[in-house]
Image 1 (cartoon, rainbow, N blue to C red):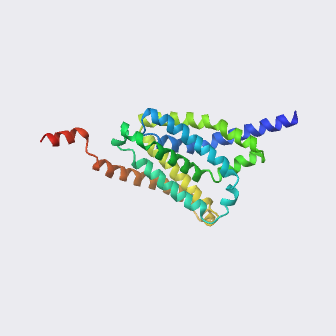
Image 2: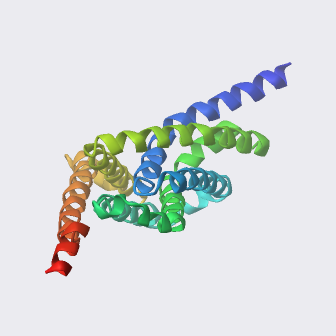
Image 3: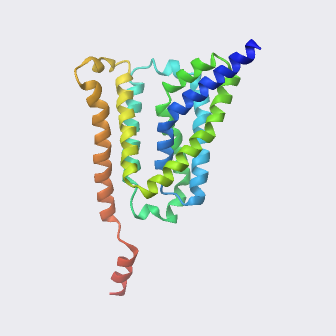
Length: 235
């Protein structure tokens, strides 16, 4: 009976941790799949989530070692910043067509890669709750799949109606990237410098929104609407 209580309490802890840590992942998935057709969006959300969770299970075994390597967190933060900017930039009028369905595989790769960057320190909390029990770890992460799928599906539909949420979501990724830089063992001293603890995450969040929307504006200028093309041809 005691074993059962320990097992279920540990499983509950893993589920709670995953629920708390899945917010960023759901935002990445929602942003990455926003431009896909409805048919491919479901595939992208499912396979992206499945691949990310599977990778997270493998990552748990080596996360503690990776976090000790110099500049791993900092480089991961910079790569996540690039991904956040790219996700804003790609939200052009042209990308909201069925032509974007060809990007399904690329979207899945972005989801898995972004999750890999953000999960280095998160998996340690899950591994600690599992207490070295591989069955608990796999079961807890597997059950988290529908949570992430539901959350990202909801956010994606909401972003379609409220485009401002795209920038807010990307800003959150930029903030997460800033925290990753501060957590790096070689840059941890920055937290002790006055205001930098706040300026770096918030600064990256603002930078992502400004650069992403600027690149999006430039990209929109390169897109010639189909009706204008037709009128030019007729002339």
